[in-house]
Length: 392
Ligand SMILES: *Cc1c(COP(=O)(O)O)cnc(C)c1O
Image (cartoon, rainbow, N blue to C red):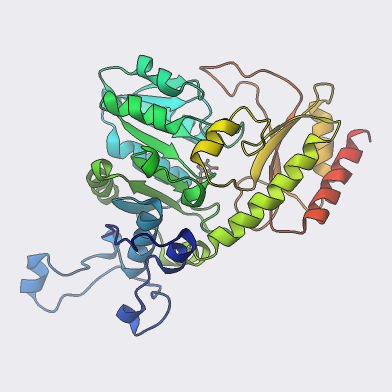
């Protein structure tokens, strides 16, 4: 129940405002109702047995979930989309929809940690062969394709190390070998990277981040290209993945302002990133929208914006303990996992032991920042206090 009904060639902001809404179906109310529902009643047995009634049981969808699935499908330029209970659940749904026992899966070495954990535990147990590859591999992925390779998992930029990937080149090689391309596109969102138009078959969003946008609910979405849609829909149905209507409502509400929030996250994030580049304590800022970043050319070619998440590495004479003192001195930045909400967050990043396919050069300790919607001068002042704490 989520095949895309496209608003044609309307601009992004217009589509974010209107996608998945049909007020005339709900007495003119601007937003669809929040359907708290399980059972759906039928007028008679003939209708019940015909299978023709729009809704028959809420596990398979209701007007609230349909509205968000239609909106996501439209924004992603997809054949259809399914919701999941969180981002990791969306990763699991996407991978289970295209992999069977005996199949081979290639995963970027820069993948989100829990995605690796899923692959190394549950997917391995189900008899799926896993290999990790260098995120910078590009068209070279062709050499890693085996006769049983059914999917290539990508993520750009990686959410801790921020390396870009050449998605069109990877997609071309994967498709030539008969494999699907799966992408975790949470960082850019469909606002700043149109994954499916660049060759991706299953585009994943941790909706917990920018779609919900207010750190008050968890959600995941998977949008599919025409060749991946039928299996995605069938797998979501078979697994019984369902999201509660209040969380779906928060996703719909967040979606309407996502482009406006993203623009502010991008601008403030870049301002802070450029300022960090001038600090003598900082060796490197990991942000693909900076011209000095190794992924900048790919970002410029394929993406049309950046979100507010990036990292920086201290000089290598800064100790891990000092980087913790930096974090403990922050007052505005929360110390917590996740990102994409309205507030600034920071975490320490342990680069050591993160990679299995490619070595990770070791420098000073790394910190990941999510730049929220606070005033940039206050954000900078908070980080300045952190730098002061380095020297005690
Ligand atoms: C947070 C995150 C996820 C997982 O989302 P949850 O909703 O926390 O399960 C997946 N991928 C990336 C890149 C993330 O940052």
